[in-house]
Length: 177
Length: 330
Image (cartoon, rainbow over all chains, first blue to last red; front, side, top):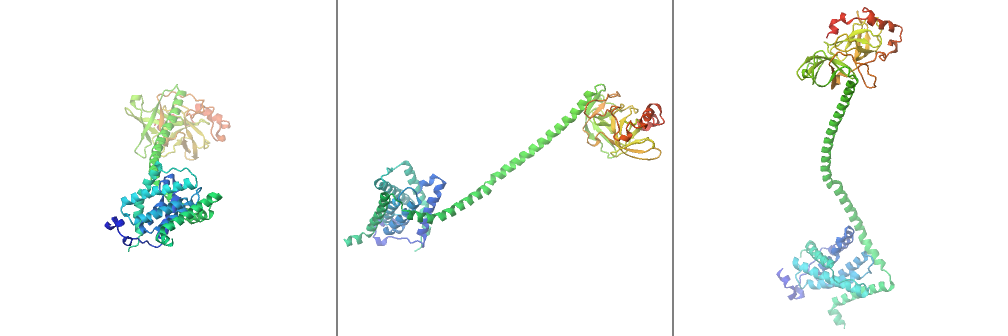
C-alpha cells in the first residue's frame, strides 16, 4: 500500500497493473449498462447514478492502460448512447473515451485503493465527464446544457459514494498474481 | 513525425477515437440521420437481459406481495376473526332478546285481550331435576299473589297448575306429569273426559267410552270442572285412539310447547276467559269455531246435537267430573 501512495514518483515499470478473470470487464460493462437501462424504469432516482461511468473509471485506474481505457470508455459510451433516445451516437462516447483515458493515466500516479481517494477520484471524474458532455452538447449540438446544478452535485456525491462500495466488489474480480 | 506518433501512441489513439466520434456526431447532425445500426445492436444486446430482469422482478414482487406481505394479512385475519366472533355473540344476544320480546309481546297481547281475568306473566327459570317429574319453576311466588292450584297457561294452550309456592318462586306441575289431571271436553262433540299425564310427553284423555267416535285432530278444551282451569281453554288435539276396556285410550298432543317454555301466564282467578276474536294464538276457543279437524267429528254430523245435549242433560253419556275425582282434582 505504501508504494501505491508514492506511485507517482516511481517509474512506469514499477506500477502494479491488476489482471482480471476473463470476461470480467465485458460482464461488468454489460451489467452496468443493463442495470442503468433497467433500473431507470423503477424511478428517476437512478438518474443520480452513472454505473457505466463507474465501470470505465474502475477498469481505467486498475488496468492503467490508457489505450484500453479509452477504448473501453468509447465502447461503453457508444452503447449508452445507443440505449438512449433523442441524443446522437457519440455524445456519451466522447465523454467516456476521455474519462477512460484520464482515469488510466491517473491510475498510475495516485492511490486508487483507498476508499477516500476513490471517492475523490470519482467525484472529480464525474464532473470532468459532465464538462465534456456539456461542452460537446453546446459546441456540436448547440444545446444550452448547464455545466453545474445542485442535482448534478447530488448525483456526483451519490455516484462517488456508490463507487466506494462498487469498487470494493469489483476488486473481487481481480486475478491473484 | 512518425516518431512523435509512436511516442504518444495513446494520445494519438485518443485523438483518433474522439475525432471519429465527433465526425459521427457531425454526420448525424448534418444529415439529421440516426445511426440506427448502433442503436439496434445496443438494444438487441441488452433487451433479453432486461426481459429476464423484468420477469425476475415481477416474480420477486409477486412472491413478496403474495407471501411476505401476507404476514400482515394473517394478523388482520386474526383480528377480523375475533371481531366476527364478538359480532356473532352479540348477534345471538340480540336474537335472543328479539325472541324474548316477541314472546312477551304475545303474552302481553293475550293478557290485554283478556282483561276480565287477572293474570300474571312469569318466566320459567328452571325445571325439575327428577326425570320422572314434569315440573317447572317460575320466577313468581307468594309475594306476587301466586297460590297453589292456580292455572298456568300460554297463548298456545294450557301448561299446568301451581303445586308449590315459595316466597319468590313457584313450582308448576305440567299436564304431562303422571300426577296431573285436567277436566276436558271435545270441542266438537262436547264429550267430557279427563286429561291425565303419563310421565311421557303425550298425555291421555281418559274416561271416554268406546262408543264415542273420536277422530285424530279433534280439538280438546278445558271443561272447567276441575275448578282450576276456566272452561274453554285449549288443551290440545287428538293424536290417535285405541279401543280399550271399558274406555278407549286417546293420546293427546298438547297445544302448548311444553318442552320449550320460557314465559307463561298464571291465572289469578277462575274467571272464564272470553273468546278472543283476533288472529293471534289463543288458548280460548269460541264454541262456534271449535270444530274438529276431521269432518266426521264435526257438529254437522247427525250425532253431534245429541252429544252436545248430553253435555248438560245426560251425565251417563259423558262421565261427569264428579265421577272421576282423582282426575278432576289433581
